[in-house]
Length: 232
Image (cartoon, rainbow, N blue to C red; front, side, top):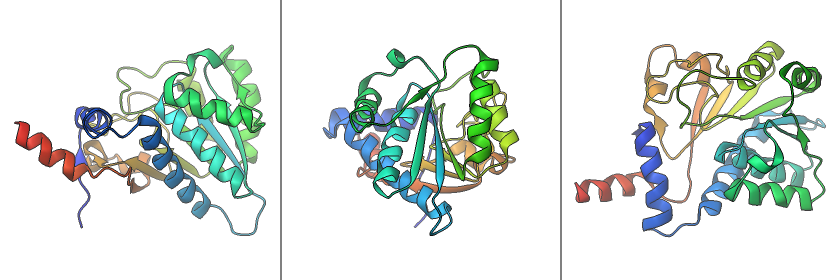
C-alpha cells in the first residue's frame, strides 16, 4: 500500500485533528512516535554490542520524541545519552512531561546552551564515540535560515560521519521543497510521522533523508484526509 504524502500545513492540521477532533492526547501521539523510533534505532545497532546512542534534542515535539526514545532504549539495556540544546526551562508541554520522566528515572541530561564553541567542545567527543546519533533538533515547522547553535551543531553531526537517525525530518530540511534551509543533517534513515513529507520526493532530498520509514501514530492519516475532504 502506497504511503500518504503530506505538506507541512497538512501535518499541522493532522495533529490538531487527532488531538481536538478524535481526542487523542498529544502525549499519546508522542509515545507512539518515540516507541517506533526507538525500534528503528535498535535495528540500526550491531547486535550484542554495548551500544552508545547520542540523542540531540531541541525544545519542541521532536525533542520530546527523543526523550521517549531515550527511555525505551534504556529499558532495552542501551546506553542513551540525551543532549538538550536549549536551557531546561525552554522545554514545555508534552516534551517537558517526558523530560521529567527521564529526570525521575535518574537520567543525566546534558544541557548545552552556552556559547557555541563551548558547546561544540563538549559535543564533538560524544559524537565521535557514538554508535548512533538521533536527530531530534528541528521539526517540520522550521522556516527561514538555520541559526546558531543549530547551524554549528548540524555541521558537527555531519563532520562526525556516524550513522544518524532523524526524527520526522532531518534538521534543516524544508518539508515542502525538500531543499536545505542552511546546514542540514545528512541522515542515514528518517522515521517520519504519519505521512511522507512532500519535499522528500523532490530531487536531491534523499541525500539528506536517507532511507525513509513512516511511523504509525495510532491515527490513520487517510482517515484525516477523508474527514477533511468531507468538510471541504
